[in-house]
Length: 99
Image: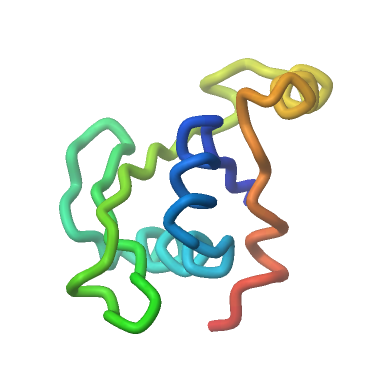
């Protein structure tokens, strides 16, 4: 699975010191059904751990599950959005997040 941050969230995460590992953990928990709120339509509200304060005092993030076929984007189009700075790929989710 590929995980992306929007350009706005990239700036926010950098300013707040939110690591990609923390974001990957939030996505992993959401995929396991451990969500704070299911807003419907593949959108969930999920807490991202705040360093030194845990999940309960964490940041609240909106996670949108977007299937590639729903967006009808080719790999080249996704790569162009990344190159344009509109999105940033977090990392190889399946490889980077320990269970």
